[in-house]
View 1 (cartoon, rainbow, N blue to C red):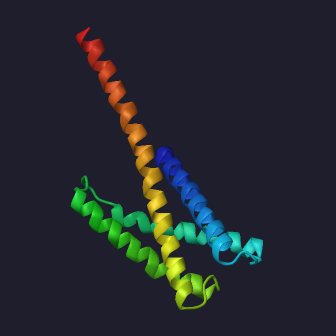
View 2: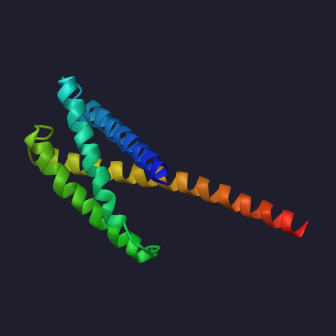
View 3: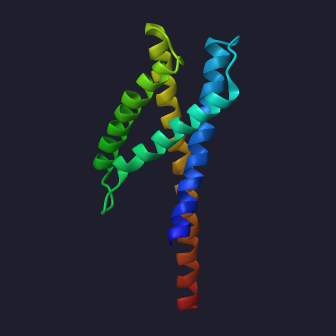
Length: 144
């Protein structure tokens, strides 16, 4: 069970890191194509962003299954938490400078969160389909 949880969290880390890197690529491509990034410190900072995003998912933790309303409340809370932590940190690191930049950066954080939910939903739907197929096969064997 422990190894399964570690694997799950490592997979999430890689997915979040990839989403952040994709958003960063498009943000730079669209708004600052001439930027030159110090590669080592940049990748380290993105890893730190990823760790923050991963740890902030703790707002979804519940001992019981979340209702749809509870899930939406936690999703909004998670977005606020991400914006509140990542925006100031990104400003300190010089990722954004002024008024318009903060809106662009906040928009890309929102985009990254939406991408995460789409990917996570797809993975969960695939898992649910596999479980349903196993249940169907077990019922057929039991009745057959």
